[in-house]
Image (cartoon, rainbow, N blue to C red; front, side):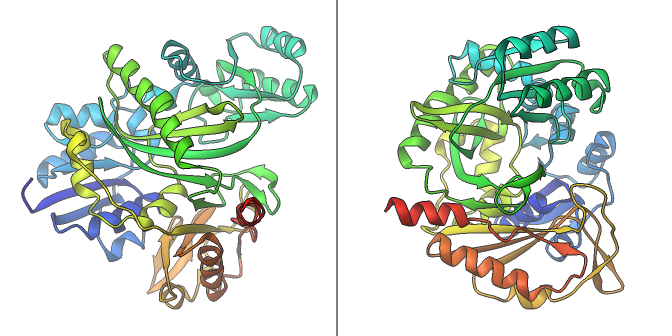
Length: 432
Protein backbone atom coordinates (compact mmCIF):
# COMPACT_ATOMS: atom_id res chain seq x y z
CA UNK A 1 0.00 0.00 0.00
CA UNK A 2 1.43 3.33 -1.02
CA UNK A 3 1.11 6.62 0.80
CA UNK A 4 -1.48 9.20 -0.05
CA UNK A 5 -4.82 7.54 0.67
CA UNK A 6 -8.06 9.49 0.42
CA UNK A 7 -10.61 8.32 2.98
CA UNK A 8 -14.34 9.01 3.32
CA UNK A 9 -16.05 8.25 6.65
CA UNK A 10 -19.85 8.15 6.57
CA UNK A 11 -21.77 9.44 9.59
CA UNK A 12 -21.90 12.37 11.96
CA UNK A 13 -21.74 11.06 15.51
CA UNK A 14 -19.23 10.30 18.23
CA UNK A 15 -18.25 7.00 16.64
CA UNK A 16 -17.32 8.73 13.40
CA UNK A 17 -15.36 11.42 15.27
CA UNK A 18 -13.40 8.66 17.06
CA UNK A 19 -12.72 6.84 13.77
CA UNK A 20 -11.62 10.11 12.16
CA UNK A 21 -9.30 10.86 15.10
CA UNK A 22 -7.61 7.47 14.76
CA UNK A 23 -7.30 7.66 10.98
CA UNK A 24 -6.08 11.28 11.02
CA UNK A 25 -2.88 10.09 12.75
CA UNK A 26 -1.99 7.71 9.91
CA UNK A 27 1.14 8.53 7.88
CA UNK A 28 -0.63 6.86 4.94
CA UNK A 29 -3.38 9.49 4.86
CA UNK A 30 -3.52 12.18 2.20
CA UNK A 31 -7.08 13.49 2.62
CA UNK A 32 -9.86 12.71 5.09
CA UNK A 33 -13.53 13.46 4.41
CA UNK A 34 -16.51 12.90 6.73
CA UNK A 35 -20.11 12.98 5.50
CA UNK A 36 -21.87 14.77 7.07
CA UNK A 37 -19.45 15.00 10.03
CA UNK A 38 -19.81 17.37 12.98
CA UNK A 39 -17.90 20.28 14.59
CA UNK A 40 -15.46 17.78 16.11
CA UNK A 41 -14.55 16.14 12.81
CA UNK A 42 -14.29 19.59 11.18
CA UNK A 43 -11.04 20.21 13.09
CA UNK A 44 -9.30 17.13 11.64
CA UNK A 45 -11.13 16.45 8.36
CA UNK A 46 -13.23 18.06 5.62
CA UNK A 47 -16.94 17.74 6.37
CA UNK A 48 -19.17 17.04 3.36
CA UNK A 49 -22.88 17.97 3.67
CA UNK A 50 -24.31 14.62 2.54
CA UNK A 51 -26.80 12.45 4.44
CA UNK A 52 -25.38 9.11 5.55
CA UNK A 53 -28.14 7.26 3.64
CA UNK A 54 -27.80 9.29 0.41
CA UNK A 55 -25.90 6.46 -1.24
CA UNK A 56 -26.01 7.77 -4.82
CA UNK A 57 -24.53 11.14 -3.83
CA UNK A 58 -21.92 9.56 -1.55
CA UNK A 59 -20.70 7.26 -4.33
CA UNK A 60 -20.68 10.13 -6.84
CA UNK A 61 -18.60 12.20 -4.42
CA UNK A 62 -16.19 9.29 -3.87
CA UNK A 63 -15.73 8.84 -7.62
CA UNK A 64 -15.25 12.55 -8.28
CA UNK A 65 -12.70 12.96 -5.47
CA UNK A 66 -10.90 9.67 -6.17
CA UNK A 67 -11.58 8.28 -2.71
CA UNK A 68 -9.57 5.11 -1.98
CA UNK A 69 -11.59 3.80 0.95
CA UNK A 70 -15.12 4.41 2.25
CA UNK A 71 -15.76 3.64 5.94
CA UNK A 72 -19.46 3.58 6.91
CA UNK A 73 -20.10 4.33 10.58
CA UNK A 74 -23.83 3.67 11.22
CA UNK A 75 -25.85 0.62 10.22
CA UNK A 76 -28.50 2.31 8.05
CA UNK A 77 -26.32 2.94 4.97
CA UNK A 78 -24.91 -0.60 5.24
CA UNK A 79 -28.34 -2.22 5.31
CA UNK A 80 -29.32 0.08 2.43
CA UNK A 81 -26.41 -1.21 0.30
CA UNK A 82 -23.60 1.36 0.44
CA UNK A 83 -20.94 -1.40 0.18
CA UNK A 84 -22.65 -2.86 -2.92
CA UNK A 85 -22.83 0.55 -4.57
CA UNK A 86 -19.15 1.18 -3.81
CA UNK A 87 -18.23 -2.23 -5.26
CA UNK A 88 -20.08 -1.44 -8.48
CA UNK A 89 -18.10 1.80 -8.70
CA UNK A 90 -14.79 0.07 -7.99
CA UNK A 91 -14.29 1.78 -4.62
CA UNK A 92 -13.10 -0.15 -1.56
CA UNK A 93 -15.59 -0.09 1.32
CA UNK A 94 -14.87 -1.31 4.86
CA UNK A 95 -18.35 -2.65 5.47
CA UNK A 96 -20.60 -5.59 4.60
CA UNK A 97 -22.85 -5.98 1.59
CA UNK A 98 -26.57 -5.44 2.12
CA UNK A 99 -27.01 -9.22 2.19
CA UNK A 100 -24.33 -9.63 4.87
CA UNK A 101 -25.70 -6.64 6.80
CA UNK A 102 -28.80 -8.73 7.52
CA UNK A 103 -26.80 -9.88 10.55
CA UNK A 104 -28.06 -6.63 12.06
CA UNK A 105 -30.99 -5.90 9.77
CA UNK A 106 -32.90 -9.03 10.81
CA UNK A 107 -32.91 -10.65 14.26
CA UNK A 108 -34.41 -13.79 12.69
CA UNK A 109 -31.56 -14.02 10.18
CA UNK A 110 -28.99 -13.91 12.99
CA UNK A 111 -30.77 -16.54 15.09
CA UNK A 112 -31.06 -18.88 12.09
CA UNK A 113 -27.38 -18.35 11.27
CA UNK A 114 -26.39 -19.03 14.90
CA UNK A 115 -28.29 -22.31 14.85
CA UNK A 116 -26.76 -23.32 11.50
CA UNK A 117 -23.22 -22.52 12.70
CA UNK A 118 -23.74 -24.10 16.15
CA UNK A 119 -23.10 -20.74 17.84
CA UNK A 120 -24.29 -20.70 21.47
CA UNK A 121 -27.31 -18.39 21.81
CA UNK A 122 -30.63 -18.11 23.65
CA UNK A 123 -33.50 -20.46 22.75
CA UNK A 124 -35.91 -18.63 20.45
CA UNK A 125 -38.91 -18.61 18.14
CA UNK A 126 -40.27 -16.17 15.57
CA UNK A 127 -43.81 -14.93 14.96
CA UNK A 128 -45.64 -12.86 12.38
CA UNK A 129 -49.03 -13.29 14.09
CA UNK A 130 -49.70 -11.34 17.29
CA UNK A 131 -52.17 -13.87 18.71
CA UNK A 132 -49.64 -16.68 18.30
CA UNK A 133 -46.98 -14.53 19.97
CA UNK A 134 -49.28 -13.81 22.93
CA UNK A 135 -50.00 -17.55 23.28
CA UNK A 136 -46.28 -18.39 23.22
CA UNK A 137 -45.56 -15.87 25.97
CA UNK A 138 -48.23 -17.45 28.17
CA UNK A 139 -46.64 -20.84 27.55
CA UNK A 140 -43.05 -19.74 28.24
CA UNK A 141 -43.56 -17.30 31.12
CA UNK A 142 -41.38 -14.38 32.21
CA UNK A 143 -38.75 -13.01 32.20
CA UNK A 144 -38.62 -13.16 28.42
CA UNK A 145 -37.13 -11.04 25.62
CA UNK A 146 -39.18 -9.54 22.76
CA UNK A 147 -37.31 -8.24 19.68
CA UNK A 148 -38.66 -6.46 16.63
CA UNK A 149 -37.08 -8.35 13.72
CA UNK A 150 -35.92 -5.32 11.76
CA UNK A 151 -33.95 -2.15 12.46
CA UNK A 152 -35.64 -0.01 15.11
CA UNK A 153 -32.92 2.55 15.92
CA UNK A 154 -31.75 0.50 18.89
CA UNK A 155 -35.19 0.63 20.50
CA UNK A 156 -36.72 -2.63 19.28
CA UNK A 157 -35.75 -4.89 22.18
CA UNK A 158 -37.83 -5.31 25.35
CA UNK A 159 -36.60 -7.37 28.30
CA UNK A 160 -39.96 -8.17 29.89
CA UNK A 161 -39.73 -9.09 33.55
CA UNK A 162 -43.46 -9.87 33.81
CA UNK A 163 -46.08 -11.40 31.53
CA UNK A 164 -47.88 -8.04 31.50
CA UNK A 165 -44.77 -6.32 30.14
CA UNK A 166 -44.30 -9.06 27.54
CA UNK A 167 -47.90 -8.83 26.28
CA UNK A 168 -47.64 -5.02 26.21
CA UNK A 169 -44.49 -5.28 24.08
CA UNK A 170 -46.19 -7.57 21.56
CA UNK A 171 -49.17 -5.22 21.38
CA UNK A 172 -46.95 -2.16 20.87
CA UNK A 173 -44.64 -3.75 18.29
CA UNK A 174 -47.03 -5.96 16.27
CA UNK A 175 -50.45 -4.35 16.70
CA UNK A 176 -49.71 -0.66 17.32
CA UNK A 177 -46.70 -0.88 14.95
CA UNK A 178 -44.54 1.56 16.97
CA UNK A 179 -41.50 0.49 14.90
CA UNK A 180 -43.35 0.30 11.59
CA UNK A 181 -42.37 -2.51 9.23
CA UNK A 182 -39.45 -3.45 11.51
CA UNK A 183 -41.99 -5.03 13.85
CA UNK A 184 -43.93 -7.08 11.30
CA UNK A 185 -42.15 -10.10 12.78
CA UNK A 186 -40.93 -10.54 16.33
CA UNK A 187 -38.29 -12.85 17.72
CA UNK A 188 -39.09 -14.07 21.23
CA UNK A 189 -36.25 -15.62 23.18
CA UNK A 190 -35.25 -16.83 26.61
CA UNK A 191 -33.84 -14.20 28.96
CA UNK A 192 -30.12 -14.81 29.52
CA UNK A 193 -28.57 -13.74 32.80
CA UNK A 194 -24.98 -12.82 33.56
CA UNK A 195 -22.47 -10.13 32.67
CA UNK A 196 -22.90 -8.46 29.29
CA UNK A 197 -20.04 -7.44 27.02
CA UNK A 198 -19.53 -6.09 23.51
CA UNK A 199 -16.72 -7.69 21.51
CA UNK A 200 -15.47 -6.24 18.23
CA UNK A 201 -13.63 -7.83 15.34
CA UNK A 202 -12.47 -6.53 11.98
CA UNK A 203 -13.29 -9.03 9.23
CA UNK A 204 -12.30 -9.58 5.59
CA UNK A 205 -14.70 -12.41 4.80
CA UNK A 206 -12.47 -15.27 5.97
CA UNK A 207 -10.29 -13.83 8.73
CA UNK A 208 -11.04 -11.84 11.86
CA UNK A 209 -8.76 -9.46 13.77
CA UNK A 210 -9.74 -8.85 17.39
CA UNK A 211 -10.47 -5.15 17.97
CA UNK A 212 -11.30 -4.96 21.65
CA UNK A 213 -14.03 -5.48 24.21
CA UNK A 214 -16.19 -3.05 26.18
CA UNK A 215 -19.15 -2.90 28.54
CA UNK A 216 -21.84 -0.37 27.65
CA UNK A 217 -24.15 1.33 30.17
CA UNK A 218 -27.51 1.38 28.41
CA UNK A 219 -30.04 2.67 30.94
CA UNK A 220 -30.41 6.40 31.40
CA UNK A 221 -30.13 6.55 35.19
CA UNK A 222 -27.56 5.72 37.84
CA UNK A 223 -27.76 2.16 39.11
CA UNK A 224 -29.04 0.98 35.71
CA UNK A 225 -32.46 2.57 36.20
CA UNK A 226 -34.86 4.13 33.72
CA UNK A 227 -35.36 3.47 30.01
CA UNK A 228 -32.74 2.13 27.62
CA UNK A 229 -30.73 4.61 25.57
CA UNK A 230 -28.22 4.47 22.76
CA UNK A 231 -25.53 4.26 25.45
CA UNK A 232 -24.70 6.51 28.42
CA UNK A 233 -21.08 5.44 28.67
CA UNK A 234 -18.71 2.50 28.39
CA UNK A 235 -15.56 0.99 29.86
CA UNK A 236 -12.78 -1.07 28.29
CA UNK A 237 -11.71 -3.65 29.13
CA UNK A 238 -14.39 -4.81 31.61
CA UNK A 239 -12.86 -7.01 34.34
CA UNK A 240 -15.14 -9.95 33.54
CA UNK A 241 -13.91 -10.14 29.93
CA UNK A 242 -10.95 -12.43 30.59
CA UNK A 243 -8.45 -13.50 27.90
CA UNK A 244 -10.05 -16.98 27.99
CA UNK A 245 -13.51 -15.53 27.31
CA UNK A 246 -12.17 -13.40 24.46
CA UNK A 247 -10.45 -16.41 22.88
CA UNK A 248 -13.59 -18.53 23.37
CA UNK A 249 -15.73 -15.87 21.68
CA UNK A 250 -13.42 -15.60 18.68
CA UNK A 251 -13.32 -19.40 18.29
CA UNK A 252 -16.96 -20.33 19.00
CA UNK A 253 -18.88 -17.25 17.82
CA UNK A 254 -16.95 -14.89 15.51
CA UNK A 255 -15.13 -17.35 13.26
CA UNK A 256 -18.06 -19.81 12.90
CA UNK A 257 -20.29 -16.87 11.91
CA UNK A 258 -17.80 -15.80 9.23
CA UNK A 259 -17.55 -19.37 7.91
CA UNK A 260 -21.34 -19.69 7.72
CA UNK A 261 -21.60 -16.36 5.88
CA UNK A 262 -19.03 -17.59 3.32
CA UNK A 263 -20.99 -20.84 2.93
CA UNK A 264 -24.11 -18.78 2.16
CA UNK A 265 -22.28 -16.79 -0.51
CA UNK A 266 -22.46 -13.55 1.51
CA UNK A 267 -19.00 -13.14 3.09
CA UNK A 268 -18.85 -10.55 5.87
CA UNK A 269 -16.37 -7.69 5.62
CA UNK A 270 -16.01 -4.78 8.02
CA UNK A 271 -16.66 -4.33 11.72
CA UNK A 272 -18.49 -7.19 13.42
CA UNK A 273 -19.95 -6.39 16.86
CA UNK A 274 -21.01 -9.32 19.00
CA UNK A 275 -23.26 -8.54 21.96
CA UNK A 276 -22.63 -11.32 24.46
CA UNK A 277 -23.95 -12.64 27.75
CA UNK A 278 -21.38 -14.41 29.90
CA UNK A 279 -23.02 -17.47 31.40
CA UNK A 280 -21.37 -20.13 33.61
CA UNK A 281 -20.79 -22.38 30.58
CA UNK A 282 -19.28 -19.58 28.48
CA UNK A 283 -20.35 -16.64 26.30
CA UNK A 284 -23.67 -16.72 24.47
CA UNK A 285 -24.59 -14.52 21.51
CA UNK A 286 -27.31 -11.94 22.19
CA UNK A 287 -27.06 -10.20 18.83
CA UNK A 288 -24.72 -9.15 16.04
CA UNK A 289 -24.29 -5.61 14.81
CA UNK A 290 -22.51 -4.86 11.57
CA UNK A 291 -20.61 -1.73 12.62
CA UNK A 292 -18.52 -0.39 15.47
CA UNK A 293 -20.56 0.37 18.57
CA UNK A 294 -21.25 3.82 19.95
CA UNK A 295 -19.97 4.74 22.60
CA UNK A 296 -17.77 1.61 22.49
CA UNK A 297 -15.80 2.95 19.52
CA UNK A 298 -14.98 6.13 21.47
CA UNK A 299 -13.84 3.92 24.35
CA UNK A 300 -11.72 1.34 22.52
CA UNK A 301 -9.93 3.39 19.85
CA UNK A 302 -8.17 5.74 22.33
CA UNK A 303 -6.30 2.62 23.53
CA UNK A 304 -4.90 1.94 20.03
CA UNK A 305 -1.14 2.44 19.64
CA UNK A 306 -0.70 1.46 15.99
CA UNK A 307 -1.97 2.74 12.65
CA UNK A 308 -5.59 1.68 12.06
CA UNK A 309 -5.64 2.44 8.33
CA UNK A 310 -3.64 -0.58 7.01
CA UNK A 311 -5.96 -2.96 8.89
CA UNK A 312 -9.08 -1.25 7.51
CA UNK A 313 -7.67 -1.49 3.98
CA UNK A 314 -6.76 -5.15 4.54
CA UNK A 315 -10.35 -5.89 5.55
CA UNK A 316 -11.47 -4.86 2.05
CA UNK A 317 -8.97 -6.86 0.00
CA UNK A 318 -8.71 -10.17 1.84
CA UNK A 319 -5.28 -9.62 3.40
CA UNK A 320 -6.32 -9.25 7.04
CA UNK A 321 -4.27 -12.32 8.01
CA UNK A 322 -1.14 -10.21 7.48
CA UNK A 323 -2.42 -7.23 9.54
CA UNK A 324 -1.84 -6.54 13.21
CA UNK A 325 -2.67 -3.89 15.78
CA UNK A 326 -0.98 -2.94 19.05
CA UNK A 327 -2.78 -1.60 22.09
CA UNK A 328 -1.94 0.25 25.30
CA UNK A 329 -1.91 -1.82 28.46
CA UNK A 330 -4.36 0.61 30.01
CA UNK A 331 -8.03 1.20 30.81
CA UNK A 332 -10.53 3.48 29.13
CA UNK A 333 -13.80 5.06 30.26
CA UNK A 334 -16.34 7.15 28.35
CA UNK A 335 -19.09 9.28 29.88
CA UNK A 336 -21.81 10.50 27.50
CA UNK A 337 -23.23 13.98 28.08
CA UNK A 338 -26.88 14.16 27.02
CA UNK A 339 -29.57 16.79 26.60
CA UNK A 340 -31.92 16.95 29.56
CA UNK A 341 -35.01 14.86 28.77
CA UNK A 342 -33.18 12.24 26.68
CA UNK A 343 -34.17 9.54 25.68
CA UNK A 344 -37.54 11.33 25.62
CA UNK A 345 -38.19 14.82 24.26
CA UNK A 346 -35.32 17.26 24.73
CA UNK A 347 -34.40 20.83 23.79
CA UNK A 348 -31.52 21.77 21.51
CA UNK A 349 -29.53 24.95 21.00
CA UNK A 350 -27.93 25.38 24.42
CA UNK A 351 -24.33 26.62 24.31
CA UNK A 352 -21.55 24.44 25.71
CA UNK A 353 -18.46 25.96 27.32
CA UNK A 354 -15.13 24.62 28.54
CA UNK A 355 -14.46 22.00 25.86
CA UNK A 356 -10.93 23.18 25.12
CA UNK A 357 -10.01 23.24 28.81
CA UNK A 358 -11.44 19.75 29.32
CA UNK A 359 -9.57 18.36 26.31
CA UNK A 360 -6.25 19.52 27.78
CA UNK A 361 -6.66 17.35 30.89
CA UNK A 362 -4.44 14.21 31.13
CA UNK A 363 -5.61 11.26 29.05
CA UNK A 364 -8.80 13.00 27.87
CA UNK A 365 -10.37 12.90 24.40
CA UNK A 366 -13.65 14.65 23.60
CA UNK A 367 -15.80 13.29 20.78
CA UNK A 368 -18.70 15.28 19.35
CA UNK A 369 -21.89 13.25 18.94
CA UNK A 370 -24.75 15.76 18.60
CA UNK A 371 -23.34 19.28 18.33
CA UNK A 372 -23.42 22.18 15.90
CA UNK A 373 -21.15 25.19 15.46
CA UNK A 374 -22.57 28.69 15.73
CA UNK A 375 -20.48 31.88 15.47
CA UNK A 376 -17.46 30.22 17.02
CA UNK A 377 -19.43 28.51 19.78
CA UNK A 378 -20.61 24.92 20.17
CA UNK A 379 -24.33 24.25 20.63
CA UNK A 380 -26.20 21.08 21.59
CA UNK A 381 -27.98 19.53 18.62
CA UNK A 382 -29.07 16.05 19.69
CA UNK A 383 -29.91 13.66 22.50
CA UNK A 384 -26.43 12.26 23.06
CA UNK A 385 -24.25 15.33 22.57
CA UNK A 386 -20.68 14.60 23.71
CA UNK A 387 -18.67 11.49 24.52
CA UNK A 388 -16.01 12.30 27.10
CA UNK A 389 -13.27 9.66 27.11
CA UNK A 390 -10.24 9.24 29.31
CA UNK A 391 -7.57 6.57 29.54
CA UNK A 392 -5.56 5.65 32.63
CA UNK A 393 -3.27 3.02 34.11
CA UNK A 394 -6.36 1.34 35.56
CA UNK A 395 -10.10 1.77 35.45
CA UNK A 396 -10.32 3.95 38.61
CA UNK A 397 -7.91 6.48 37.11
CA UNK A 398 -9.64 6.44 33.71
CA UNK A 399 -13.06 7.02 35.32
CA UNK A 400 -11.74 9.80 37.59
CA UNK A 401 -10.13 11.56 34.62
CA UNK A 402 -13.31 11.30 32.53
CA UNK A 403 -15.43 12.84 35.28
CA UNK A 404 -12.83 15.57 35.88
CA UNK A 405 -13.28 16.52 32.22
CA UNK A 406 -17.08 16.34 32.53
CA UNK A 407 -16.93 18.72 35.49
CA UNK A 408 -14.82 21.18 33.50
CA UNK A 409 -17.55 21.49 30.87
CA UNK A 410 -20.34 24.02 31.43
CA UNK A 411 -23.69 23.22 29.84
CA UNK A 412 -26.88 24.09 31.69
CA UNK A 413 -29.10 21.68 29.72
CA UNK A 414 -26.78 18.69 30.00
CA UNK A 415 -26.72 15.63 32.23
CA UNK A 416 -24.85 12.36 32.51
CA UNK A 417 -24.76 9.20 34.55
CA UNK A 418 -22.46 9.52 37.55
CA UNK A 419 -21.71 5.82 37.97
CA UNK A 420 -20.00 4.78 34.73
CA UNK A 421 -17.53 2.03 35.65
CA UNK A 422 -18.51 2.07 39.33
CA UNK A 423 -19.78 -1.50 39.43
CA UNK A 424 -16.79 -2.81 37.46
CA UNK A 425 -14.38 -1.09 39.85
CA UNK A 426 -16.26 -2.54 42.84
CA UNK A 427 -16.16 -6.05 41.36
CA UNK A 428 -12.45 -5.73 40.49
CA UNK A 429 -11.57 -4.64 44.00
CA UNK A 430 -13.61 -7.45 45.55
CA UNK A 431 -12.51 -10.17 43.12
CA UNK A 432 -8.82 -9.47 43.52
